[in-house]
Image 1 (cartoon, helix red, strand yellow):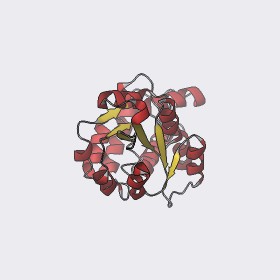
Image 2 (cartoon, helix red, strand yellow):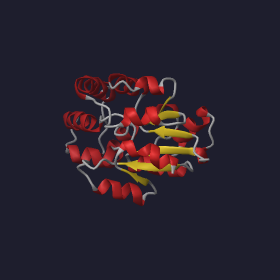
Image 3 (cartoon, helix red, strand yellow):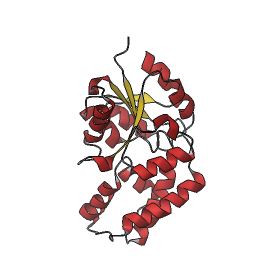
Image 4 (cartoon, one colour):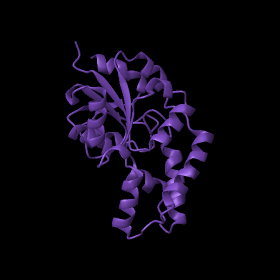
Length: 218
């Protein structure tokens, strides 16, 4: 029998295809605040990080203190954009329905964002009551705190958990938590080097979400 007892999914870029939308809105929001970063730079720098970590990075690396209402304004614009365009990651609904073990979500995003995107894509019922956010822990990814919280709440030992992540910070967090991790990057991913970086950080490769059940059963 498999040692695996729980699959912990990241949300953005793993369950819902929200990363391109979020990167575009964040790039525009930062530009309006006085920091010009391309969408590609935003994606490479902030993928997998909480918005608190984004704000901290801007202050630390660029010396720019964002306005107190920056996060609320960004979230308002993001939610409008998500309602118009967000979709589920290809094959993920069928994959989650096929898994023969409990699942949950552990995301750097806020609970409201998770509920919005999972609700819009029809995935929320599969994870209802099992959504864990970086706002619940002292340290976000790449620290292990969020994944350890999810395992504790789901009453599964870390060594029996499997994480599905698309970010370097997420892979690092899962490894630090003592969990097996799959690094997801589809074959249509513009940055094909990202999968290599996830593997180098300790992830097993996953390029088609439909392959996950067989990989877990192996």
